[in-house]
Image (spheres, rainbow, N blue to C red):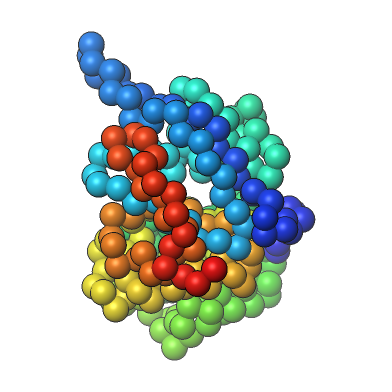
Length: 242
């Protein structure tokens, strides 16, 4: 299993975001959450978008990842205008090329760490032999080989998030989106999780876009975008040596 996109050079954008705007209407009040943001994202890089609660960072992630349609603007994924596709084609595109990691882990209580991944791979029509090989490979990659037979109730918060990362990596996605992946974790586990995401960008040449308000993540990012009140106010290299 691998994504169908040919690898891009490091200096060629894999995602191009152009003049993205998004608002919500509540009664007679219109809240402009995103106010026309433009930027590019690159393969093999972990880009972190920072901002206070309500700044629009999670909305921006949802728009870029095909979960929320913008009012205006373009999102181009490897040259494909995402929001020009039909709803079903966007769903298929996400399934084939995107991985998602959320702060709530989204694990099944009754399944072991390995089974969490096997369920996904079965849905993607992998053979049983291939699915077991991939599940064990990604669990080893995130350091969980010894606990692959345990269920979520037997795992720590950090281990649960690593299972979620392993599940996302199992598809070998070209694009990985993480929404507050460390907010429920202590310092040590938070650093382990963000280090794994950075490692995934380098090893798999994935484009990784992570939303957070956690300043502990700054040293682990290749790039940091700051958003305030729906507008990008800063775009700079992160703490990782370029």
